[in-house]
Length: 290
Ligand SMILES: NC(=O)c1ccc[n+]([C@@H]2O[C@H](COP(=O)([O-])OP(=O)(O)OC[C@H]3O[C@@H](n4cnc5c(N)ncnc54)[C@H](OP(=O)(O)O)[C@@H]3O)[C@@H](O)[C@H]2O)c1
Image (cartoon, rainbow, N blue to C red; front, side, top):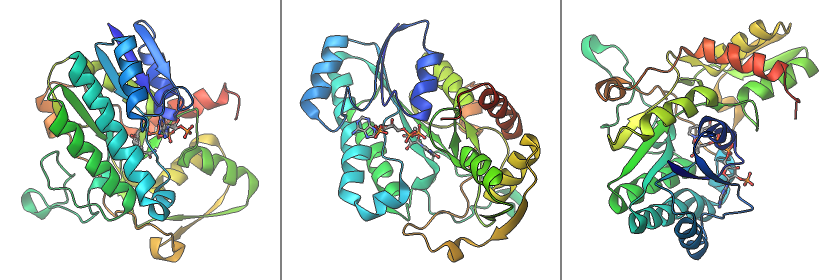
């Protein structure tokens, strides 16, 4: 299969390159393909003639998006539209990655009044510019290209690139005291596992939207505690409310994504998040800390 990866220099993009290494691969970072450039996208996709396009490109700086919603829309909505149009012309399949941030962070209730994860079929209601731009990207991909896999994921961490786990390792080693929010709940997801899940999904022909996160959920505080414990870092870890952080963009409080639809589609569940964390930490142990 011939595969083109856009955003190949990001944390997920780099692991997608590894996951699809046995295919004929064109992997393009932001310097090689700017997905907001319609003509460049059309030309590159036409010339590479892939049967599968993976879009790992996005502007993921949530507070940056709040300050510049037009740029957020351009990268996170219009760029995916150009990719979907190029795929439609070629008859290629597009895997596009989206986010838990399309939801408002309230807690949907399931049977017995118990909190449940957001399903693929719940209405989106983003509460920040990043979420709005990603929701618009989803809509444009759906309207443009039936042969799409729209993968919603959350709380992404990989060995390469910036993320929460790597930040905790750095600040934990630098400081004796670390304060982390304890009022946001989600499913930490690890790019090795997500890339493998995307590889499995991409050949199913079961198009549509699907949630793909590591199994289980926790708060950022819990993830920080698990990171310090697994890495053997002694830290005085303290809890904080999101409101005390006073960040430009609001964050959803409840980001857990349901996996019923993924199971119905016959997809393999991702490993529990503590397993993904353990494997990330051992990968980082053997890696250049950059
Ligand atoms: N990170 C998370 O916690 C999280 C959570 C839920 C969903 N997601 C989604 O998962 C996907 C992968 O995220 P990630 O964490 O791997 O993000 P990432 O590490 O920030 O990587 C995104 C990549 O996109 C590139 N990019 C930005 N603008 C571009 C453009 N106009 N054209 C081409 N490439 C461009 C960036 O390049 P430069 O660095 O050179 O700009 C970067 O290499 C995204 O769709 C994201 O929305 C992420």
